[in-house]
Length: 105
Image 1 (cartoon, helix red, strand yellow):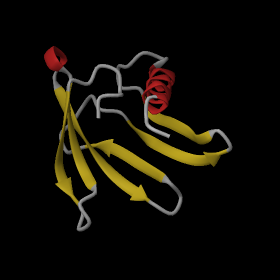
Image 2 (image 1 turned 60 degrees about the horizontal axis):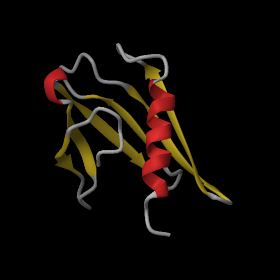
Image 3 (image 1 turned 30 degrees about the vertical axis):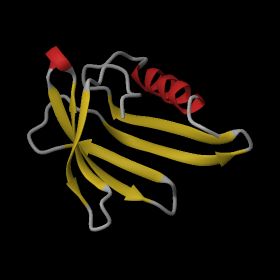
Image 4 (image 1 turned 120 degrees about the vertical axis):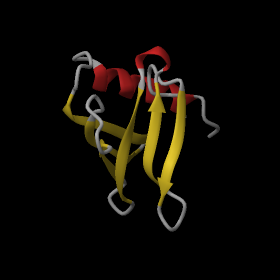
């Protein structure tokens, strides 16, 4: 849960019938929090995310996972940086790769 840079706490606010997250609240300590609404496409191995109602500073975009000989290819695409640095997408991808390297094989 804590592989995204800067996140201090994550809480699932709403789930689908199977228990999958539909809305997630992210806390960033002193810099506040926001929620994202998720739309999952299990067949395509992608998830689209948009800010929750009334949220002004959350990112929107798509994360996808593609099978790869070395494991998987993670692609994180943003529609808006919403005040984040220009390297935000790369920072998230790097953090995800480091987190995934620690997972059991």
